[in-house]
Length: 286
Image (cartoon, rainbow, N blue to C red; front, top):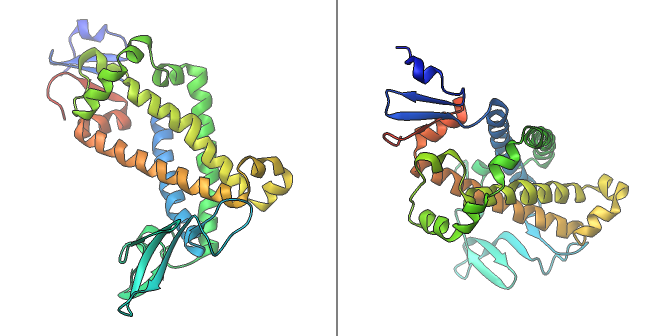
């Protein structure tokens, strides 16, 4: 069924269906493509990164490894009853994590490894292959991010999407309260990201992701030789590795919160928006 002439006269970025629901073109094609490429690249980077971490499951601060005093270690040790235990050590504090971290089942056999086989790429212990996956998708991630950034700046999408407007900043407290109560904007307010979304995306795009990339480069001996100042910024190669690990975990936390909010605020509507670009306003929430 075709739309009435009055609806066809609306801008290409907005339509009305059956007089009850408005549709806005929320996500341009390049934004959608960059989103899904980033999602795939980050998943491979996470799993291959855990494979690399498993080769030496400890973190230090400074230039060199202080094996007797790691800042964090994921290991296995023998308990008082003589049985092996998975242990996460943070400074002087130890936490038993058998079956999850440090000691888990692999092909029916109890195996000492920091992260279990299902969380790493490849699943078996293979540092060389893990590095190949990590470096390949790191380049894909960086190139995709640069394309997104250049497009966002050139088209004005970055400013419109990520820079909070005056009224949003003034109502920051109200936005926090609405988020905590899981109340989501509707009508005109839903046509733009709220202030918490904008500030969070700004922190991810302009702080966390660049820091993660730079810390990764600072760990490379070739980059250390070419740009020694980069490693010095992080206080040493081991510090850069620790920062890289911490930022990766912050990104995982961001993704988890992002997915949960997508689910509770209307999964199909959000997915439709990120697949087709069109986002529904009004009517039932789906």
